[in-house]
Image 1 (cartoon, rainbow, N blue to C red):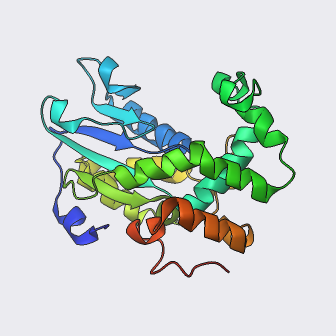
Image 2 (image 1 turned 30 degrees about the horizontal axis):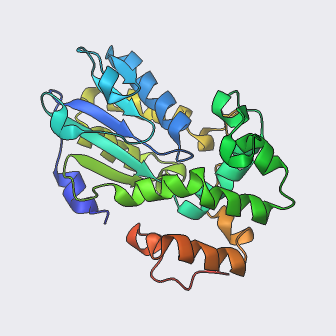
Amino acid sequence: MLNRLSQILGLGSQTERVLVGTHHKCGTVWMKDIFSAVCDHLSLVFYMGEQQHLPRRYDLFFQDHSRFRVSSLVGAHRGLHLIRDPRDLLISGAFYHERDTGEPWLTAPDPQFQGLSYQQMLAGLPSLEEKIRFEMLHIGGATIRDMLAWDYGCPQFYEAKYEDLIDDVEVRQFRDIFTFLGYPEDQMDALLQIAFNGSLFSGRVNGHVRSGQPRQWQSCFTKPLHRQFLEHFGDALVRLGYEQNDQWCP
């Protein structure tokens, strides 16, 4: 799925606008902070929001659910699309949605939960396993389906995995990404410093992130969760390049 050779050879140019797409609990705040800082450094216009409200003047369009209609955009574009291991996504969502994040939808009464909020539903579950299962059936599950529905054959996008970037201490893949997106080589050292400073491995990032480490699922997924994941999402992990087969339960 992730054809690295074609990605590296298909270099962008400075005349192309940039698209950056993530998914919920897939490094959204991390990427937003890095790319908004990149735009500040290069005196570029950063926009985050829905495409229907896209301003006429922008240099980078950031979309936290990867909702791009590329064919409707004017001019040339080059982009980054970031995914995460669905199992870790579910765990991250279970922890995140249970705490007070300041997001109104989390605490709003919901008819599908007999007037309780999403947050109250999570908080009332007796175990982490039950919370992960709840995420699987709701927000986390919707996010996984969005990742599966993405067009991974689009040559305009560099496909990256959260797990690779979170370990990119020497920022080599960040260099590949910035080059693909067409950022000037004479600014590369400064951009790579921005990426390093904005990543967990710099030791400078705190607040929003609970853990951020990959492969958390190995200590959380039980055989029943493994079975239920396969029932809901089939070979999703194989299709997304995280497993060779479905026999991944520890």
